[in-house]
Structures are given as C-alpha cells and as structure tokens.
Image (cartoon, rainbow, N blue to C red):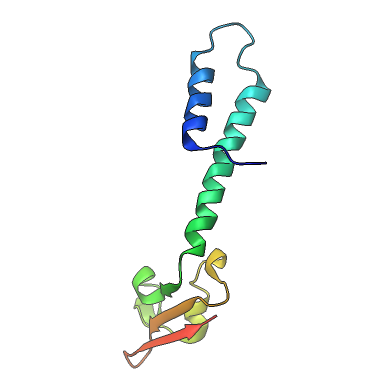
Length: 106
C-alpha cells in the first residue's frame, strides 16, 4: 500500500471532521484514515533510522553506565543501542573505564 502524503492525510482528516451526515464517519473510514497516518509515521521513522551512522552511548545514556556514570564496557554499551539502529555499519562510541573514547562498528 502506497503511503499518502501529509497533504492527503490532512485532507482526509478534514473530510472526516466536517462530515455531518448520520453514519458518514464509519469505522471503516475513520480506521483507514488512522491506519494511513500510522503508516506514514512508520515510513518516516524507517527513513530516519537509515540515516543514522553513529550512536554515542555516553551522550545518549549519560547515567546508565558503570556506577551511574557515562562510562561503559563494550558489552554494557551495546545493550543501550536501540534495536532498530543495530545495523551493519553503525558506529557505536562510548567512554570506557579509563575515560577514553572507544568506537566499534556493527
């Protein structure tokens, strides 16, 4: 199913909002509109994820490391990376226990 543009989604939402006839806003009409909106959001989310090439765990999770700090081991850093970002080529960086930046690639 092709995803509608935002303009099309807004037009459909306005049509639903302005319908005043009895039974004009059926479950099928409203449900389809909601489904189209969710599809658009998912499509854009996937596109944003594709554009992410590096994830700095110490920046995104400054208090989830060792003893509540921004310092990590490779094992503890990887679990902080959101699953949808764990793609081949993603560079993951973090501050290690010595205070140095480590960078690894999926």
